[in-house]
Amino acid sequence: MNKIIIICIFSSILCFSNIYANEQSNNIENVQHNQVIAAASDISEILNKAEEGNPQAQNKLGDYYRLGINVEKNPKTAFKWYKIASKKNFNKALNNMGMCFMTGFGVEKNEVEAVKWFQKGYEAGDITASKNLGNCYFYGIGIEQNHVNAINCFDQSAQKGYPPGMHNLANCLYHGYGANKDLEESEYWYESAKNCGYVKDKNDFGLFDWSE
Image (cartoon, rainbow, N blue to C red; front, side, top):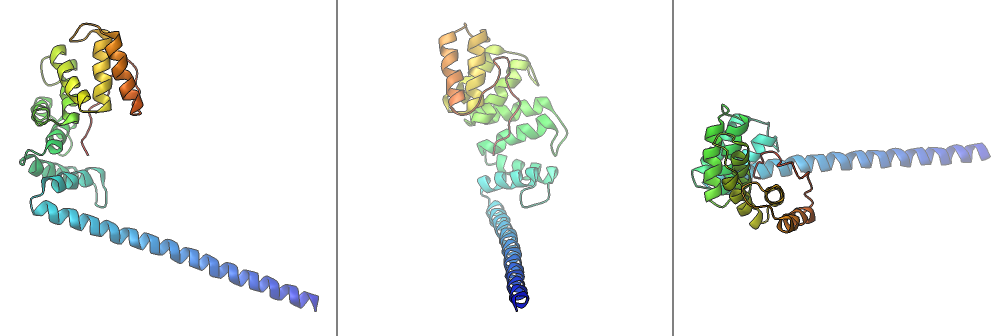
């Protein structure tokens, strides 16, 4: 009798375990299905806005194709959408065009052309393009080296709150690149960048950055 009761209890537990496992599996499948639907809905919405001429959506679509978000990664298609958005003088797209030429992403690498786009982004007030242009001037990439112009670019980026720009401005002031050494001012900008979670060596000016 006891054996029968134990068997019944064990069978019940096993049955409930299987039911729970099936429910969990169904829940996971439902979540994944919903994510696929959400992704399709998102890309569809972005695409519609981009085709309607919205430069922010066009740049975002470029990001999606660059990073492979909700679509298959495609450098040439990413470049195409950045170029379309740049025709509206959308600041982030101007910087991203520079990044495409600087890295050879979706187009033949051309550092001189990259500088031209960073310059356009700088003039449009883009914080990332300002820092990137500063790096070009600092290292002499695609343009003649000029530390005074470099620190001016970093200053614009820093004043608008971009941590890498803050750090690079601090580097210039710390070492005396393009301006007189100012350890107090450099410390202010190092701390400002650090408070934003950006910490690098005082000789590190970082890489070129995309705008997202």
